[in-house]
Structure formats: structure tokens, C-alpha cells
Image 1 (tube, rainbow, N blue to C red):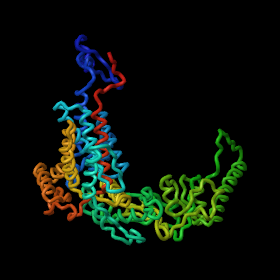
Image 2: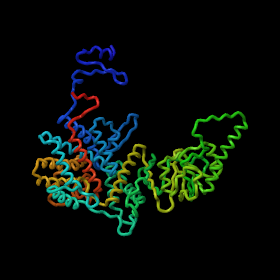
Image 3: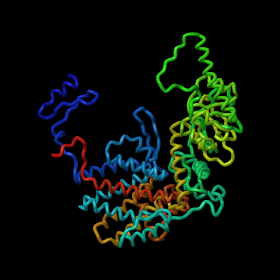
Image 4: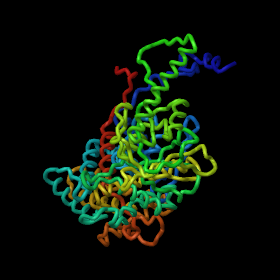
Length: 584
């Protein structure tokens, strides 16, 4: 008896048969059909449980001793990473609350670029504390309001560049106390003084911040070398004269499997994953004058349906001559503009390729739109949409353009465009033993670059290793002592949740989480010094400034704000509805 026959023998009073989209039968039992949707406290607890499950998945990936996750896609593609945003992006998350945490990690990545794991862990810790308070009979709205107060007073720790949300009365006074405490924690770093360019100043604060980001990654063994490259890349494209911001889009991170991680280099220019279109074209073009084309190198095509009949050899010869005249006219326009290199967004056939070769004009085809824009920015050229618009002023300039390859695979070549003088775009060329390692190295460099960019924009840092969370927790607890309403319980719970970050750091480092957090908290209270954190690397000191472990203040503020906002949203959900629900 097959499976379908077995299902058909089930008592009709207990279940009925249904078929899915693929034709597979399944039973829907009476109790399951009559099961009502979750509402009230049950819905809240189910949502909290889903969020905690996601946060616990990322918990072991936090810190310098965090573990990596292997993610296998539906097509068999393997990704190995400990980046929170990447893990949640590749996870098959079905629960709507779990999707909220995935969106939270994406928001942190889009706003700051770093701290994507910590923000999810913090949100999970807040919800775990909220669940305990709900069990004690405290209304979710009171918990939400208490968290908001704690977040405002204990978390908005930006010295001058980030604003503190004003409150009235007693709350305003507590905010002043918390802001003063946070200003004592944060330190300003400066990479240049006066009219001095940052590249000639002290770059060590930026490098130390980048190394803090890289030490927890798979590239941690080469953190000093890679941190130096990240700082040089950011300073190369930073606009200090006008906006004071970093042109992040001008930094390209390209990876090539093969070689060693320490072979990773910074190229003052652009690297294209393309080679010259003809194998006999020159592989090295000096003093390049580049025509950047977004138009196809071919005769124009009618935009309407057409039919062309070739009835004789003379007609075919005339058609060939017309096509040749178009190609010759395009090459004449290139020569008249003074171009000695063509970079085209579209492809061209072998005949056009041969004409370019015989005319002595090297060409590159099938260059993507993003890379084409980057070439234009790097070389100071203009993207030309029509050959009639090509002029010498629209050509890009480069010191040298050459084709290169690694190892014995000469077919896997790439093009390097080096600029004249100060570069307007740079490329980090990442090397590694395999494609999985290269991709993870690219993600790690992205986080480090974002960390350096944040410090260039807002040059304030706070001690890492959980020191700032413990200091903020102490400030929040002190504020809770002055709160007379029931919200003091949720404010204390917020402080306890903050300690979950240093506890995770200690646990991932093989230390006793409770004992280490208690010891560091006592040291901060006794000494009044908020720089003491978890000694994850067992260096013999808990002073994070001595260990050169610190984070951007903007990143820490963003984590507190985003996590609290999402937690407030979840705590206000008391019913879960679907489009198929019938409200009786």
C-alpha cells in the first residue's frame, strides 16, 4: 500500500486529506485545523523566543575568539563567515520576528558598516530581560518605556557630533548625568592638525581601530598589514576640503584566489576583471588617453522590425562596405580625439575587434556599468554615449594601463589602471588560498574600512572589550535608583542586558562569563576608570586603551538606538494575524 492509500484510510472524523503544490498528500487533523492564532501574552512570548533563538545563533561569533558559521545555499554554494549581517542574509529565516532582527542587522550594516553581530545580541538580551519582566506581571508598555528611558540616558553617548534627545523634568536631569559620563568615556582622536593632510599625520588611531575590527575575523593574523591598507584607502578618497566625508563608492575591493593573504595590496587606481579584447593587442599602454564608451562599437540598428533581403553577391558587397564605413568612421573619431585606449560597456564582434587591432588602438569590452563609472572617476574622463560626442576633453588620463595575471592561469587575467598623481579611486586587491577565504577577507576589509570611515567623520572612540557596555550599565543602574515608578525594573533590566555583550566576549574566550563581568564591573566601580573591559586575548591587563582595543563611538550609539527601537516594536505586538485568519 503506497503513502497516498495509507493517508486515504485515515478516519474522516479525525482528519481530511490535502495536497500541496507538488502533488504530495498530507493530513490536516481536526485539532490542528481548529487551533487558534496566538494573541496576548502568548504571542509576545512566542515572538521573544524567536528573537532570542536568532540572537543565540550569532552569540558564539562575537569577539576576537568568535567562531565562524558555514552556510550552505540551496545550490550548494558554501559561505564561511562570522559577520552577523551575512549570516542572517543567508539564513532561511521564516518567522516574521526573526526577519525583523535580520533587518536590524542590515540597518546597522547600512548605517555604520560594523557591529552587525553585537546589535542583534543586544536586542536578544533586551528581549530576554523583557520576557522575565512579563512573567513577573509588568505590562509590556511599561517595559518599553523603561527601555527607552534607559537607552536615552545610558546610550546616546556621542560627545559633540551626535545629538541627545531632549526630555523634560527629571528625565532631562538624568540625561545630563548620563551624557556627562559618556563624554568621560569617549576620547577624541585626531589624525592631523591645522592644515596638515591626514596622510602626513598620525594614522595610528585609525590603524588601531581597524585592527580591532579585523582581529575577530579570519584575516586576524595579518591585521596590521590589512589595517594599514584600509587606512590608506580611506584617506586616499576622503574629501577633506569640501564635505569632510569619505567617498566610499570610490573604494573597490576585488578578490583573486591564489597566493597568500599577505600578498593583498592597495592599487592607486582601478582593477578590472577583464583583459584586452584581442590577444595580440599591446599589454601595456603608457600615458593612456582613454575613451570611455557606453555605446556599442557597431553600426546602428533600427528600432522597428525590419527585413533585409540579399539577392546577389553585389548586394552583399555593398552591405559589407556600408558596415565597414561605419567602423572606419568610428575609428577615425577615436583617433581625432587622441584616444589610444578604448573601454566599452558593450561587446563588439570579431570584425570590429580586428579593425581596432590593425588601427593600433587597444580595447576592453564588456565592462560593467559600476566599473565604467569608477574608471571615469579615477581617470577624470567622461562616459560617452555617442561617438559624435567624443572630444579630447572627455578622454580619461592614466599613467599606465597594463594586463596582468597570477600563477599559470593566463586566461584569468585582469586589467590595472594606474592614475596620474593623487588617485581619485583605489582598489584593494585581495589574495587568498581559495574563493571562500577571499570572499570572507573582502567582507572583513569592508568592515574595517567602514570603521575607519566612521572615525574620519566622527573622531570619537570608546574602549572596546565590553568596557563601554559595563560603564553604561553602571550609569543606567545609578539612574534607576532615582526612578520611583515601576519603570525602574525595566531600567535595571536594560543595564543587565548591556552586560550580555561582555559576558558573550568572556564566554567565547573560554573564560567564566559571570566571574569576568563581575570582576571588571567591580574594577570600574572601585577605580572610577571606564576603560576596563574583558581581557579576551589573555594579555594580562583589562585596560582597553593599553591593549589598543577601541571602537567608533558612532557605532556604539547606533547599536543602542537601533536595538532599542526594534525591541520596542516587538514588545508592542500582542497579536499575530495572517491573511487566511477568520475573526469570528
